[in-house]
Image 1 (cartoon, chains in turn red, orange):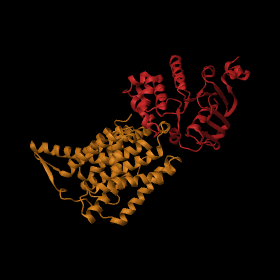
Image 2 (tube, chains in turn green, blue):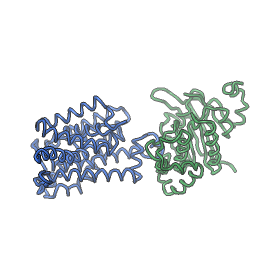
Image 3 (cartoon, each protein chain N blue to C red):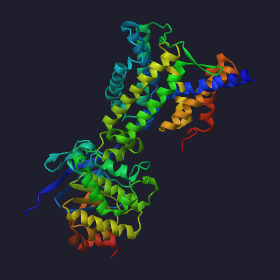
Length: 239
Length: 289
């Protein structure tokens, strides 16, 4: 079955103030795929994520999602269309309970009627969140907060999930658990783009990857071919 | 003995009740600051807008000022919403100073408008119950003061319930805690800003009526009440409804006790000095983190 293209980023240039961060970046993600964006600090990964979710707008180029031009849309419109971003650094609402945090995830009009179902779904992926639902978010461990952040994103009933540095600062055990849940989420047909610095792990989990260097896509392809690529070996595995 | 007791009890009770009025005046300022990190220097003038609106309805249509709120609350909500949508929203992204300047400009426009429409003369909302008092032992407390506390409790409970129980209320709280995260939750933060400003102004409509029942006001009364509200918010810590209430009562007590034991003419001075001292010693507020 030919997969259709869900997200198409075409030739975007993006700036932080007067500083250009992305040059002519293009990526394509098909429905159901898991794609990784790999790059060092400052390579433009987060800028690319923020451009897709509408936090920033590219100066040139276009972003199409599900057949619609979302280049200049506001974040709330993009969330309603079905893109949900789990931002870097677990940006949660610290003084709200876990339940309230999750409930806000279903704020958009499309997700609101499915709220109860989404709660069940999230609690199934992360049973700990149901146990902790009355607890203030800031009193939970980093791993639990990240689970809650992913849970909130799932509450919005996304077609595409963006995960920015999901494993940053978390223990390997927690990271394993998160990747396990990501597999479950994928199996339900949700498309995933994740941004990571850990190349080895990322190329094991993703089907395809794009490698960003100082705002340019320098390499892309299937995870398997990238693992075999000399340049990647040299740059990231030290071989 | 009895006289000494009533000497203390009268300012203490009226101070607490007056604190209710200050709480209502300050709640709107606190709400806007909590969500938009803007000190709305036009807040006092919005409160006085409420006072003049009730005054007009009372003078020309003969309705009780409290009843005028049926129209006053939606009117001020619309005014606040429009200020955010058509003036503030345009400059919010530019800098922190730009919205502050706009608010200052709006304050000047309102004050001059009141001068033209109502003359600089001092006005008050005088009703049948304005001069009535209730008696508690030896203590006489004006009915209007009691109303202030009752209204403060009603507004606080209504606001808490709204913020806690409704989707929009939760979106307002989320926006105040992390604006970027709120956007990523699908919240239209530009609209939340407009609603927050509108709700703040709607509370000002209530504050304006009870201010007018308690004190005389002029076109420039907005500034002294802005400073009081600012003091209340600093005392109570921004964003906390209970903290605002405690701050309101402290300032109310400072004013009535100061008038009683120092000098009636120095009561506002005492209030400002307290604000100044707290700003210097605990800039995050008594209850702030």
